[in-house]
Image (cartoon, rainbow, N blue to C red):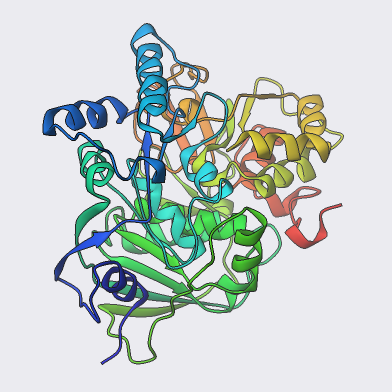
Length: 429
């Protein structure tokens, strides 16, 4: 009997020859991350357990991204606490504006293929794009990791999803992830690991692969993992990652479920108001008027997402009455977009840019507050009622291309019907 990628990574980090789904193992962790939403809990628990020496501090990053910039005194005090703790303990620190945790972690070279990585955010599953087992944990769990370098895990069952064909111009990994949510439902793959394989995955660039893994959190997945290929290894090397140790599933690995999806004819998708799994093809909701457009977040705030918007809005203006905000996922992405001229294109079109961070996505900083009855079209990963501070508004989800096309027309729009909406990553510039 063979083993899945998750089983192999967890077995190796537990010092075992093998492990199977359902077993509980204690594993050595390669890197840990704490966001500002959980930092106080983490620090308080370290004091409570009386950890005198934090042996894993040097392999831990503290990231100020949710309260960025701090919207109130309490948040500012948390940041001060994080800075002091990081200085005392010797952790890596990402301050306000450096970027979203799930972007700065791989950008900073903190993980590589074959690693086991934990973070205090459910979207830590994003690290699976690099053939790592990434998963979300609580702040108190990170306290144990910082003190010992270890944590317990229940080995998840794995669902194998083979993606055949090729996403067509104007259709992106975001559309595929929304299709998955429509197929399985929110939390439909609770505590499962997902292995995404197939031609469609191999044809994606790294930005799209990160989106594919990121949205597994809405499916309830414990992890979402891709195989490593030349694109993976080149990206990791370019960002200073440690030597990769790629892990592949055995041909006779045991899966709880295996399915194939032909992506060739997939249309752009949207999630309708208040539910991440109420999915429709964009052409079925074309009359939905919008007042706000948001591009960014840990799901779709990367360079290719900004390029998608620029390809559509170059030389144009967003619709009258529509407000558009863009939040790059990291400072580096902002600088790269600046150098490519994307910031100017989008600013001239009527968009505004926020500093890299999560605050706009979750409504913490109150920089995007829709009015009663307003509809927001967003690239975020969640559209729960009241997420942007107003339960009397609606949030719809779509790709950056769909959001940009909708901002252009004032209605939810199929990006393939506007100039630039059929852009491909390989054709930029």
